[in-house]
Amino acid sequence: MKSKKRVTIYDIAQRLNVTASTVSRALSNNGYVNEATKQLVLKTAAELNYKRNTLASNLRMGQTQTIGVVVPRINQNFFSNVIAGIEAITYQKGYNLIICQSDELHEKEVKCVNTLINQHVDCIVISVSADSYNYDHLQNVLDQGIRLIQFDRVAEELETLKVINDNEQASFEAICHLIGQGYKKIALLEGPQNLNIFRQRKIGYLRALEKFNILVDETIVVENAWTKELGAEATRKLLSLRTPPDAIFASTSDFSALGVLEVATAMGFKVPTQLGICGYSNEAFTEITSPSITTIDQFSVNMGTAVANLYFDELGNKDTSVTPKTISIKPELIVRASSSKKSQV
Image (cartoon, helix red, strand yellow):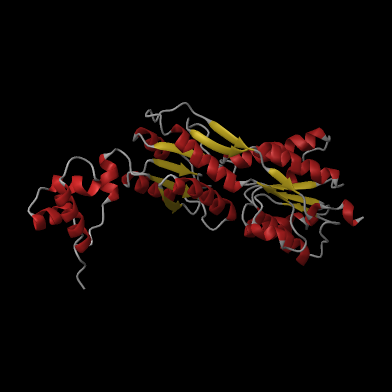
């Protein structure tokens, strides 16, 4: 079936034997058009089912009122909440969002960014993928005169607007909590160290051990254990050691912590008396596991609203090479049953 051609102002002009500029002024109520002609244009537009091309109109004004968002995973609670926070503000402002998912792949991230550039978005908001190894595509965003806001996972070398968490302090507080509960040998499941957030979380872990004069045991620091499957695999190895850890901090995500819990339970370890567990991100399922999982709330919705507000705060500045600005949102440790060892004594 042949699709219908989209009705344009030229179709209306031809029908009424007037100029396209007359139709445009009548539809936008911008400029003088006598009332009779205006009403005739509006009536004809309705009859022909004319739909205004907002993209073309906005482009003529130098903006599209559209923001592109690139996230590693849409189906993770953290990222979906950030998007919800952004949308809550942009909807009020009459802006639209285009959401892209990189699937943690650098190549796909580059394609997403290039697509958004070609869509003439006014701003690109991004949390970089774990697979990212250079950021030329993000520099290109800036070179194109498009605003760029990074959140959570950021390319630190790029001077842009950023919204982040205090990851180091959050990890420090998590380890201090575990030590305070009587755990002495705390393993760390860490994420890809090319990402700023995982480097910062490791620094917090090491700082807490130093505070309590606990020597770092590199045999229980596991690299790239940042998914449920990798967390489970790491846990099997850790709990099979001659002297296994008595706590595991899944600094990467709650999905990794869930892998820890499932394997520990299957291997007969009692949580929290024999093994303490702490995750990161406050995914919804952490409240309903048995036992519930101690985690760190990143206030993801607040992060999203901060991203959107940062954009609109800067909107009046026509110079897209604005002074770099970083907003830091303090996460909160949420203590649940998986690390509450003293309450079991």
